[in-house]
Length: 247
Image (tube, rainbow, N blue to C red; front, side, top):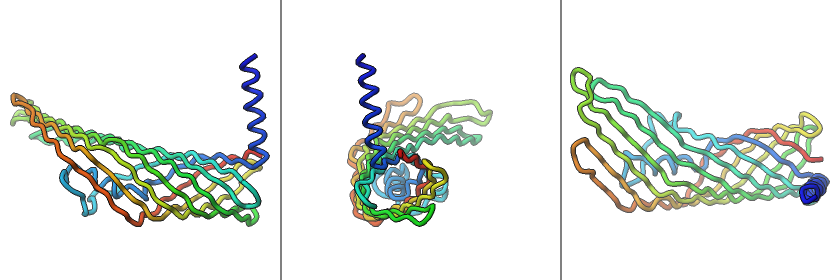
């Protein structure tokens, strides 16, 4: 009986929301707004600072963010929106040379919470929505592991060199403009694209902990503060996806 009442309540709430034109969307986007500050700060080649140079393989560092979007029409063309985004930087690289076999692993995750408000206008099958949003990115601890098997001239492993480090995460918050274009393809389904850009503030880092181990030797431990804070104009974020209209 309790389960039946729960289902009835959910159905009533869903009907109420649908009458007010609730939209649910799934999309993917780049990490354009925050990728450069994050990738340049969490750079093992610059343990004490910030990389101001472009990566040679920068195109390979792009992280995809997956977004769950909600939009709720208040009245007329005014709507409230909320975006929940998630992305991960999981990289595994293998460098195979005669002198050493090196395996490198990186891991870091990103969570975005983004409320917004906008005005929309319809043009036939298209709906244009624009407004202001406040993106908040929560960045997890950065973890890095480098394991090298050192070889002799016969390719036999003679010793192992291991380097692991952790750098505290942080957050980025800002105020954005957004432009959202939606094209209706059926009664309840639309395709959309969206552009986000604005002003961001980053506060990243904290403890930098490194452990270096070489076969036959005691581990070397390094620990110090590594922090970064800056106000900057962000690069654009591009999002594409599909929307379901509860009508």
